[in-house]
Image 1 (spheres, rainbow, N blue to C red):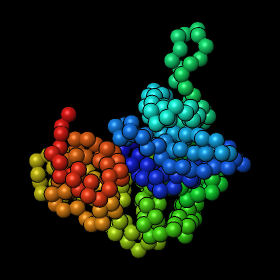
Image 2: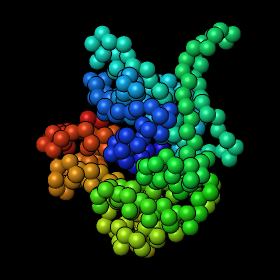
Image 3: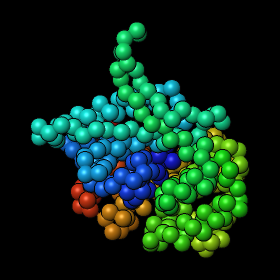
Length: 325
């Protein structure tokens, strides 16, 4: 899912309580203990999409997958993930039972007709009783702005551009609410980042992206120029790079421009995360290492390392020779 996945995982890390409360039955007492952190997690980094909880005092685990669409392979991916997750929890359980696990697929786009509330991956033989896994489906793009607001958190307001009744008037209110409820300038930038990345998906064809960018710029007085944002910056960087290539008359300028734009966007995002972890911008050599690792390992893997490793450990990791598989 690329840029949207990176954005949503980043903001979910910052607001795990708001993520969990949306999927726990109303009236239950919920305590978030933290993201799953085990030895298996170090190998299978996707496990940071799972949260340790206590629900009414009992241990629970919540696994959330953000999906661009409910493709045919999503049940397979959920089932595969649960295998890694169960192994990780069992390895660290010290003989205690593995807590019950709830899986949720948060779907960002797809068909207009209502998606089912649950999905499943059957592994049993035909004619036998069901075995496999069931998971919940949360089609956020099929919800209204009011339904998202009713979840009570700015985390879910960033999905408002996906809502089936999204309009400029409604989005103006959401932008004002995001700005007012953000605890810090950094959080406000992250919320608007996710909000604008969701606007690029546009599952209902509202075509509000340009107007929403202008609204955010007008409200924040240059936020998009000061703060690297993921999806919008990628689109804009690709467009500008393509134009530069065309103006220079370079052979295959369009392809080169697109690649240059992607590289600039990756460096904007990952360089920002590096600065948060280390307390300074990356050097030229560190930028080259970040970009090279993003090209070989993928930007999501590098983003995980930037979030997982502490200052000097991160600097050492970037200085190590890159092992190509």
